[in-house]
Length: 434
Image 1 (cartoon, one colour):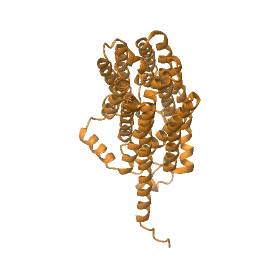
Image 2 (cartoon, one colour; image 1 turned 45 degrees about the vertical axis):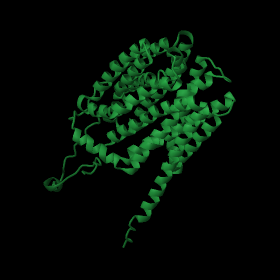
Image 3 (cartoon, helix red, strand yellow; image 1 turned 180 degrees about the vertical axis):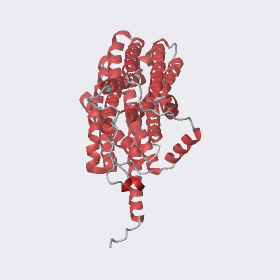
Image 4 (spheres, helix red, strand yellow; image 1 turned 120 degrees about the vertical axis):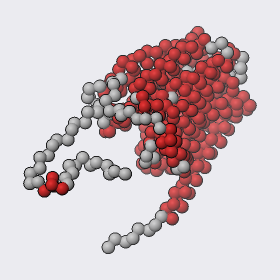
């Protein structure tokens, strides 16, 4: 593997013996940076793409009780409108990452948003629960082009020192979209029904998609690649053969199972006795997502103090405490439980996802795509299993499912700690320096 350039001039042969070699200035970095041309437009464009993606992806989650009532189906059947979307994204995120190498990041993101928005405008007219689930699956598959391409676009077009900030803005758009989509649908549905609510999200996504395409600067540093299935398959196989990466994928999926399950059925819990909250108030509960933004941003400092595994233990303990508190009959205790569940989830997700990029030495895009795939498979499974558990045993059933998933996180982390200690004991002792 070629060594990384340090930026220092290299001289060999005759050039090295020249008495007065002329030092040419290093070419200026033409990538975007804060304050530079195009950076603000790019940041706002990807923020809007993040808003549209998550508002569409979870547009039915806060409306499941109304969907159940309209179609006369159970909570577990209605939950498929969420599971189908996240499952479609999970299945297609890796193929979309390969397509972006061939057709370009901006092109794929534009096409993905266009298809997802078009489907979003059809969702309000779904004649049956089956048709609604199919439309949502197609929508999720289309949205897979956004996470597959956005980070790659930023890595190519933004200077390294500004990359974390730029990615942070895209993630912030995801958070805002996920939160605002649920809050808006809750209040709109209270007055005009769930169909008008998801239609409203579709129209908001149209505005975001058009603005995204107009604002996003054309790529200047993209190098077109070829679609080589064998190379992609070999990279994926190598990542899946890495025990640490597999543990991180499983941890991300299990944390998301808890989160997806809890937020899929919380509307049913709060809409029933003893709370009996109106739909608008139930939708506003998703403002708790703001806690996740804070916990995710502090996860780095937590990992610096406790290490990756220590941080995962803290995230698991916080999530467990939240699940147990949510069993209380007091609305204040339930909301505090949601705060802790959200904080624990986002902290665990931040630690696991960042560890993937740190662990993968090659094929980082595919390693991240595999994590996203596992993450959304966990969301899909959690939405379905959480609803099934709620149907079978009420909120206690959903909490039991969540506790089982957290137990899986702790078990995997303990196994990783043991594997690390074993590897350290077996490591060769370095020879003493002379």
